[in-house]
Image (cartoon, rainbow, N blue to C red; front, side, top):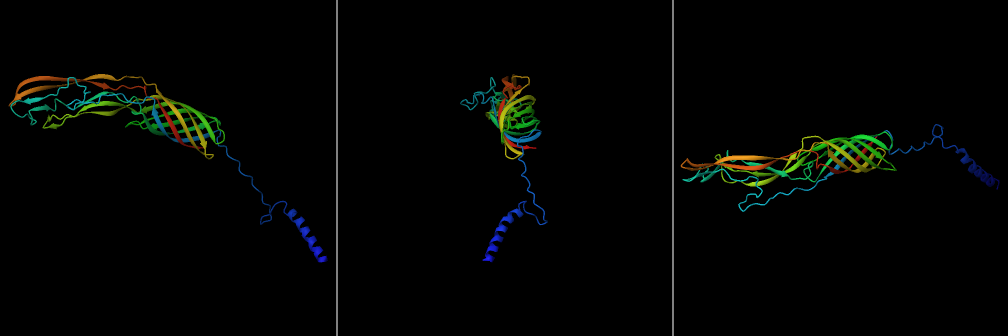
Length: 322
């Protein structure tokens, strides 16, 4: 009975003394107490004195869309109704006693009746992309001197038809961060160069044999860009939203409207093309009659300026923040 009582008392004492022995925490192998480190603080997603690098792709669309109409119908003989030459008479050599130098009674000297190419006028209403919309991309660098305001530089490039349009801007941005999101407004001023306008061209291409036209002269229309070779001013305003995935990586999407201006506008000019040749009639190589043939056509000389070049741009990209 005494042994049972002593055992019971020892267990109670051990139960009470055990927690007190380790109340100050466990000891490591050297007999020193282990110190618990506090959790690291959560980083600020949007900060003052922050550098941002954004890389983005863009879908751009023109303010002036569509095309001007041109007559593409043909006469019964296959020639285009829109043939600009008036009168449209081919130079000919007619041999009344046999075949002419081309092997046929009627020939057209190649040197007097060259291939024809005439600019009929502007086709695309937009004068930057030479089409209604296109793709592009760019990069911008911003420095936020406070959590809410920053300034930066932006470079952009757009794939105008068979030509490149590119430029750069200085920008100002105001944002309002909350949580991982930061809606923002942006604006900028800079320059743009390149691009093109689409024009309609009339073409008549001859087939030649021994220096003479065989009589085959297919007429056709082509749509060809005329490049812009002058720098214009570029203004930009836009709104967007950024989402920070981590403290240093974010996703951005915005919409900007871009104004092209500053270049003196010069309208298309009309010039006259004159083709002159001689129509002859021969017999056994001897000239019997001869008359001058004069054909005239109006050709468009493209102008240049800043009109009809404004465009919208939807951008999507990634931002690296430091």
